[in-house]
Image 1: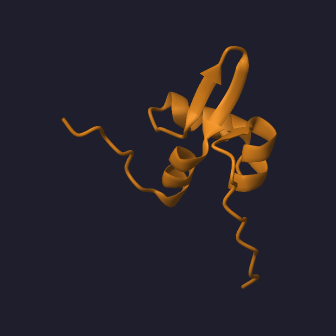
Image 2: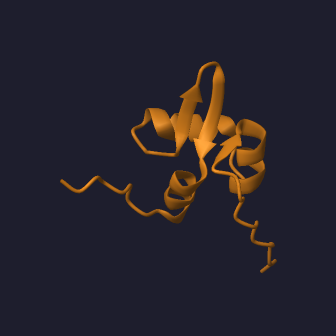
Length: 71
């Protein structure tokens, strides 16, 4: 078994598509498809820009359910 280094958690609140591909080791297309399937990958649109919310992306990658607002 080959050990791969664990990427450090980014300090930025949002990552652009290039940064998210390096961090998640998944393509933007895969993350976009998961978003369209109903998973909360952290994908957000800011005007024309596509960014990913870091905390939400990490939850998705760890397989944790999305947090819900308490009423």
